[in-house]
Image 1 (cartoon, rainbow, N blue to C red):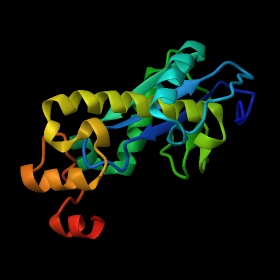
Image 2 (tube, rainbow, N blue to C red):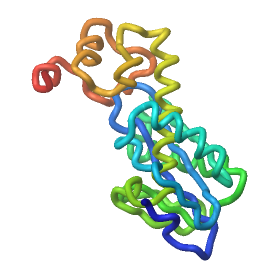
Image 3 (cartoon, one colour):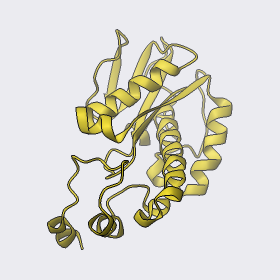
Length: 199
């Protein structure tokens, strides 16, 4: 079972993002605050779960959390500020939307841009260690998947329904055939040489 919290003195929010390595679509982030000593077997890093498990857990997380919120940064902004800064900004936007202000943050990964004056702790592979970070990874992933599935209706040629904007061979080939959509990250390379390398 994952840990309930990194510390118990302050209201703690876990944060994680989804879509950082995609060729298209926004990067999404979530922030989750659980009640003190919250425990639940099954919440885990979203990458370790099936799609049906993630969506079932999303319902539970939204029911059990004291507060949760989702933030996003679109492809145009990503191109302007780079994906690392965009990931931080998406987390900041999620934190801005929390109904309860966090007093301490635990962040998945090894880097973070400080949010206001709130203390934080970066935790490598935190989504496999702490429940609130794992929950944030599930929310960010499922809400981003929903977004990309809706976009796929308008742009079926890129197979976003299945690849969600990630750099699959089929997605790269579609870019070479049809060009970039308005939702592609233009600073991410999708040229023919890479198609050859990754095929």
